Image (tube, rainbow, N blue to C red; front, side, top):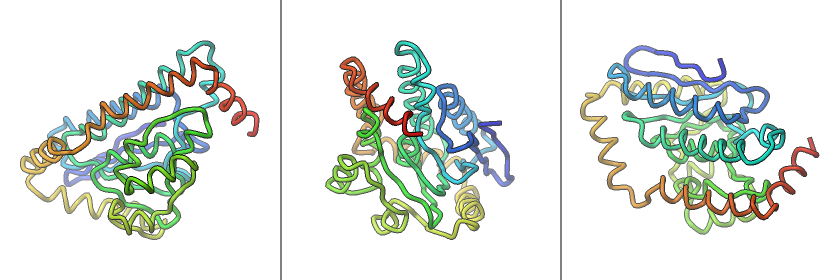
Length: 247
């Protein structure tokens, strides 16, 4: 299954993404991921969710090939709404969400990780937004939750990546571990949280969201408006066609 949910016991639920070869999610995949995370949070037996992925990378963003195969704007609108849905599901999940990140975390992956409560990363993990090279905008909202403002702008304009060790230095990655220890470490942290009184942790999640300085839903939707503008102008198709043509 591309999106699967397993109960690890002790209140820990694991949601796994598996879209070979690079975990670039199609439109339906984003909605399915959002549904899986929301349903896990609604289950009173779940005290914490671990979001992880199979394969060499955590997430490569949207499936651009699907978008370019589709006539009109249906796939573009679907991808934007799907990303919005999945990112919101992570942020609004009734229990804490731990992201376990390996390899590349790009585009939509930044939206997921930026909205997570805790980030555990393998020592080979890299993070970035290639959006400006793909004719789009988005997830600066979430990158700004991982790095300081001026660094976010530099990474955004240059479409460059940053490694897990640097994010650990900035405090947004909680722990950096060898790749083969990633899942075990994420489960260790999850079990530590799950051992607390879930009634208090659920209130804590709601309270922390309530005092957030940035309305992540509104600001991300604002960014998406510029993506639609670039598409209407024909700019985005040029860049997506060039990207698909290189593969």
